[in-house]
Length: 189
View 1 (cartoon, rainbow, N blue to C red):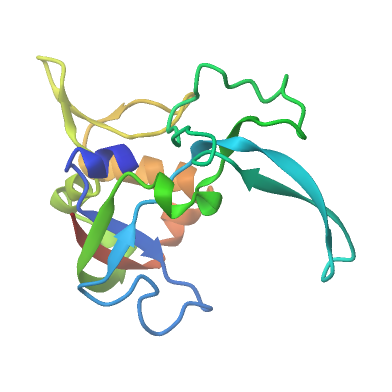
View 2: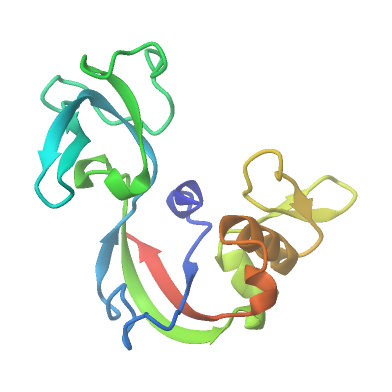
């Protein structure tokens, strides 16, 4: 979904409110600036380090991307082949979004407004603001659902595209549960 933000097609996001959620939106009040996090590829190696809290050896990624003159990648680099790379030698490694360093971010957003609503209250207009844009095949207009294969496809309405994405991105019953969600409107800086 980062690509849809960078293309200025996504200006709203929804996040589930759980019983453990803080009373205020965890993404900050309007005016808060947030950097975009996504999976990326970093150059480095893995080391074993002893964890005093877990009382065992844990693998730790040593990021050498910038110090080796490389830059973070958002698609697999040509030299990417983690299956062939020994973990204790520098190579390109896939890194999940939660491990992405700030320097790898491709964008910054600013929170404009925050509200709450039930998930099913989303409108076609809001689903399009979520990044579910129209695709015209010259016969009918469909909406891309942004899902990875094998779920990739088109839906007849923006809300159905959003619901399909939500169901796959969260858990099987998440759409039918109709949870309370934070509705965060933002702009790309």
